Structures are given as structure tokens and as C-alpha cells.
Image (cartoon, rainbow, N blue to C red; front, side, top):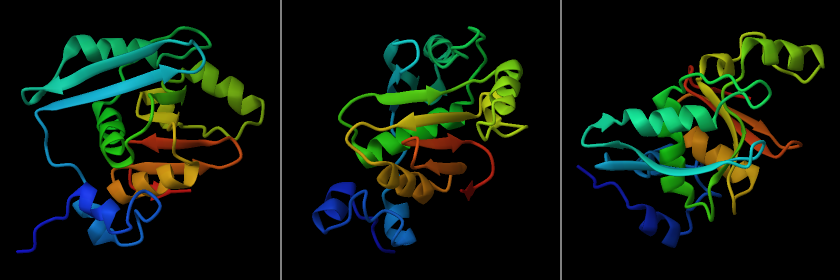
Length: 182
């Protein structure tokens, strides 16, 4: 059985974020193995708040850090807090492993209340009627030191949910719904 290649050897061989997605088997080999600790570093661009935390260890999600993440990713327009699907956090954690960002994930949007979603839709902002943001199952991010295309390719290689690439607005949408892209 062939051994999976390490991220370091993939990058050294000319792979890296720009090539992720070019070869699905090579990209799949980059998916991090289960680790004893999962961490995230997040910065909410609307509130200015930042959080660097371990949210999973010893085989389980940690309630206090998840609560802190929920608060950070709240609807910044009305302050409503909603639980964020840990699968979304795991996607971010895996992207962190692949992309090695130079700073925290920059959060454009986490949870979005139904009221906020309806208001944004009424403004003609291209917001989905049944957005997964309203269920805490989506996040819009920028990754320091990486362009939108590299982030999108890396996210697509994970095959872990929806990936939307918003070049003009310079962010990537990630969700824990079915695997799809736009």
C-alpha cells in the first residue's frame, strides 16, 4: 500500500496551495491525520475581536472554547449568538494545516440571523433564501498570505462541504452542507 506523501514533501516537489486540486489523490494525501489537538485563530473583521483557542482535544470538542467561538462568530448586526457547527471549524482547521496562514482567519460572516439574512437579500446582495449561515453551518473567510484562488482550491480538495469563491469581494464561503462549488 503506498504511503501518503507529507505536506512538506508535496510542497518541495512543486505542489503547494497553487497546485492543490490538480491531482485529487495528491490533495487527499494532504488531509491532516487525526491530531490530538485542533486549534483555530480567528479575527472578526466587523467587531475587531480575535480568538486563538484549542477547541478539540482528547477525542472531544470542548464546550467553553466552542461557546467563545459562537460568540465571536455571532451576527454582528444584531448581536445574536448561535451555535456554529463544529464541522465548519474542522474545515477551517484542515485549511490551516494546508495553507499555513501568516495570521488569523479573517472572518467576513459567521452566523447570520434570519432577520439579517432577509435584510441583506432585500438589498440585492445575492444572499441565499435558505443560507446555511442562518443555521451556523457556514462561514465566509479570507486567509492572510493566500489569494482567494489558493484558498478555494485547498477547500475544494477537502471535499468537506460547499465552497463559494467570491473573487470581487475577496473571500471564500465554506459550509458543512453537501459537497458543491460555485
